[in-house]
Image: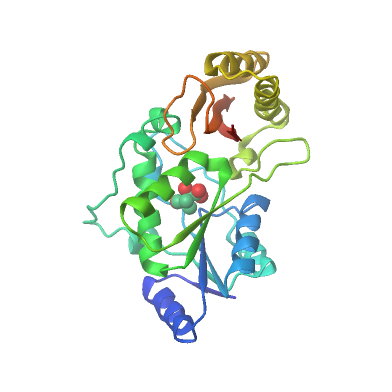
Length: 281
Ligand code: PAF
């Protein structure tokens, strides 16, 4: 496995692979990799001849008061995980190589980015779309892999690919959880032992939501109320949102029909965590 920093190095390597007729998968990450990322890499390795993992802590998707500075980093452990999982190339650019001083072109998506996480993180998806489009143009993969935990991000990337006619297959991969149900996230490392216990309220509340749906309840307000009630039993938890949305448009729905996403964002102490499940009628 090779580790490169520059756009030109990636292009040279991928061009050689292309000449040999090999297919290429891309797993975009911000580093501090865990089993969730590992599942994306493993899927790419299974579906493509070559796999590129990008590791880039993308400053423009963080708001001014968010955790860019404190975001966990462990480049050596990341490299080992990539290599052990079968990746062929890590692309780890510097910020200055991705964003020149006079960088001024951004991807601004409407509607899908405005609800859920977009409400409290208004510039987040602009940063995500912009960097992902850049990575797509640099690597030119056949397929790119994203986790379902960031369900809105996955929907946004799928829409960008459709709207811009980008010839890349977007592969969504299931949420990977700890044994006790907490969805894997690089940000889980911020939680102290009490908060770690409290964070279980996210998966517990979603289980309640799923149980309510399985009893035949379709009214979003009632499903949201059931989830909210569980979260509010946890003193360390503060709700950002509990929503039932259309799985494609990310717009609130009054009742469950077709494909919906039940999504929550909850602050545990200072750490904002997200979780979700999809449901199809
Ligand atoms: O999901 C992430 O880690 C990031 O949002 C991504 C897709 C790598 C873009 O920086």
